[in-house]
Image (tube, rainbow, N blue to C red; front, side, top):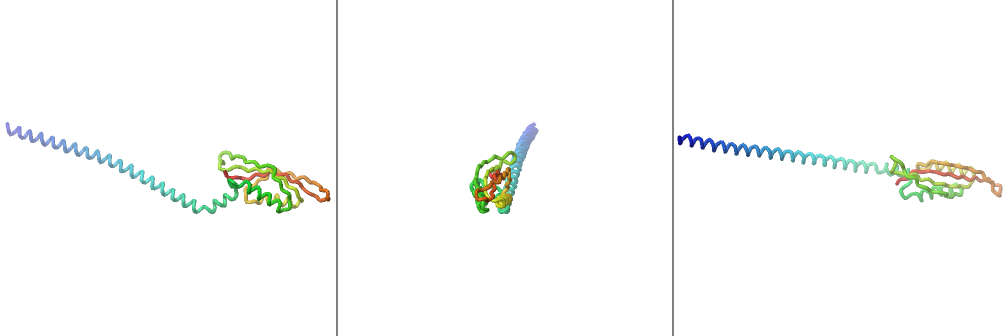
Length: 179
């Protein structure tokens, strides 16, 4: 009977050792599973950041490559602080064509959806000069390198004291302006 008890004890010890080993094995598998999940999340985050960096670098390259084209497009708009320069340019254009030019009004109309990045500059002018010079001035206004729209043009013939024929033009134009 003593022998059976030793065997029984040995069997219990072996069972306890097997249980401890099995518990260690299960614990190790659980830890590996958690570690695998953390590695997968870190890998996913790393790939996301890598893709983001690649996209950012691509965007920087595109911005650099299209700098000239964007500057050309911006030149078709009155700049943020370019209202006075634009008015001076129009006045000089009229004076260069033998016209008296007087700025009557200036207004900035805010853009509407989806064009909130731009505004509309509306300017009223009055000119005085010959018919040919007035028509030439209107043609030059339409040929300006801006998106210029003549909203209203009124031409009135005036006879002067010297018998000279003059035309008074009252016009309102609009041009796109960047905010």
